[in-house]
Amino acid sequence: MPNNMTGTQQMTLVLSRVSARFADEEARGAYALKDITFGVAKGSFTSIIGPSGAGKSTLARVILGLMEHESGEIVRNFARPAMVFQNYALFPWLTALENVAFGLRMDGASLHEREHVAREKLKEVGLLHLEKHYPAMLSGGQRQRVGLARALAILPDLLVMDEPFSNLDTITAEALKTDLLKIWRSYGMTVIMVNHLIPDAIELSDQIIVMGAHPGHVEKILDVDLARPREVRGEQFFKEVDHLTEVIRTIS
Image 1 (cartoon, rainbow, N blue to C red):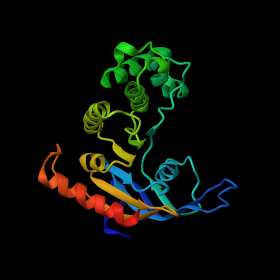
Image 2 (cartoon, one colour):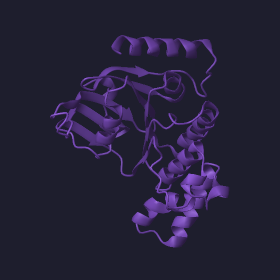
Image 3 (cartoon, helix red, strand yellow):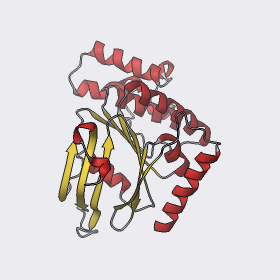
């Protein structure tokens, strides 16, 4: 077992030779993931990056138990996982407040408690003034913030984010990244982010899992040792971006 996976009590997640197959008939049971091995330290920020078809989103579902794995071992040292989706996954018939409160409602929280918590989380993401708006009335960035607030409402110890910036313009994405880092530090939770943007992975992550495709597998695990807050215009930052770009290029 690799050195970065020793001491599983200090890890939020450990995968050892995990494989999973596609269930649909068209794929005919082909492997979606093959021999995935890595660990994620508690309180860390990990990015999963790689070319299209590398199984990044599939891996996220396997981590959360939303998709079964065929073989290998997964150690899950978390109790309250939450996910933020690329396509927001908001209920169009619910207001922003009701969307944020949905998980608490499923947990049986009282109306007073879930509205109180939902307003707290909307305030954290800067959207309290839009609590009565429906998703169709919100911009893409606002919808993603509602999705983040909904995830935070259950006080997660693991937050999984699937391409959270891919549908956002640059200015909106930069603002959300800044807020996400603040929230991550204040909550002390573990974050795993599926991503395809190399600079974002370097800016946000402690560890980067680089995946290859057909089937999805781990090509390389990179540690990012840059001091925080990251100087995204500094020479060392650009060196890290260039290095990761070259790694991705060799497997694409």
